[in-house]
Amino acid sequence: MRILRCFLLFSLLLSVPVISSAGDVQVLCEPGLRVYLDGKVAGTSSAKEDGLFLPGVAVGGHVIRVEKVGFAPQSFKVEAEKLPIEVKVGAFSPLPAAAPPQPAPAKPEVVQMAGRLTVTSAPQNCTFEVDSQPEAKDVPVLRIDAVSPGQHTVAFSKPGFERLTGVVNVPPGGDVSVRGDLLAGRIETASEGEGSLRVFSTPEICSVQIVGKTHDKTTTVLNVTHLPAGEHRMVVTWRGRQMASNVLITAGHRTVVTVSFIRGDEPFVVSYEPE
Image 1: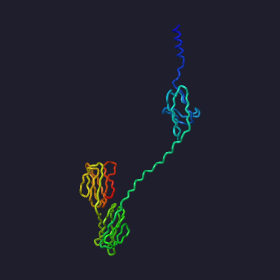
Image 2: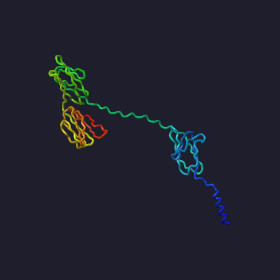
Image 3: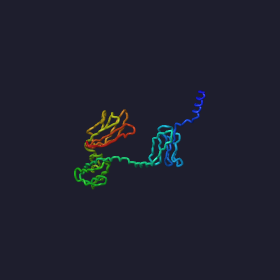
Image 4: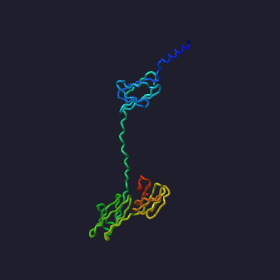
């Protein structure tokens, strides 16, 4: 009899339905919203479901995320239980307007130093022109200041002589001597004074040749002084590779040259500063 009672009790236990270890979650919200459960899309809300009904959510902690186009999403941490729970979605906040793209910073304007022309002639009195602007030359030496760097057309004229024309190159801050020899029919130019050269390089160790001399660069910077004013050929050598460029040496100024053998870099960058 005792065995029979145990058998009946066991049979009754087997016939009792097992309570599910999951619960339902009702997400109350307007239709047309995307709903995520723990980062995965759970569905889209509708008026029919008063939002979205999530059946059989495992008991435990979860994150429900609700998204609306053009608005900041809302997230809810919920603790699912065996009994149904409800999540109410409130009003959405619009996303902040995208900041307008910022214009690229303007490149700093490079202001080049004005140069000067020192004019002499034979004979002394004549008319001198710079870029078709005449100047009466009735003194032994005529000096014209504030000449912009670059090439300029010059001319010497005097009744009874053939007009002379030529082109002079005025370096930034340079003093260029121009002599118009109407008697011999020629124009002569020369840069006056001395300047210096400062070289930075990548890699740091290289050799620099200028005005017929080679200088070994073994430190961060190489300084070469007492260079005659004018345009000179500069050759830089590193491990058998050579790069060359013409550089201007101007009186009383330092020509700063940055040289790079690295692919993609500007090979020569030149600037000028007072000594």
